Image: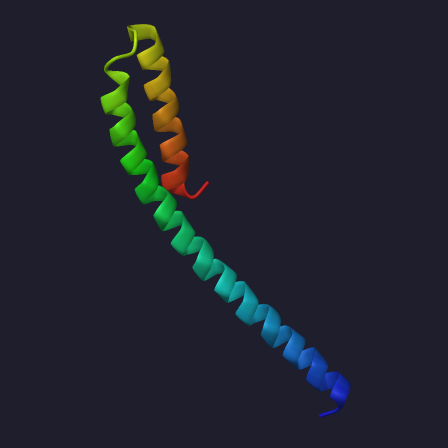
Length: 74
């Protein structure tokens, strides 16, 4: 194997490993965001009780939308 072939092979291997690691981190982050979103939705529901009806409806719809995005990974 020539030095150039070795560099190319290593670059391909490095890209594979780096991509796999990035996917693992993304998966872990998605799980954490989903859990955080669920916790925030619970807190928001408790806090929204004190809001006027129109504000509460809008706020809770927005909370569901954002926490749903967090659970789906973005």
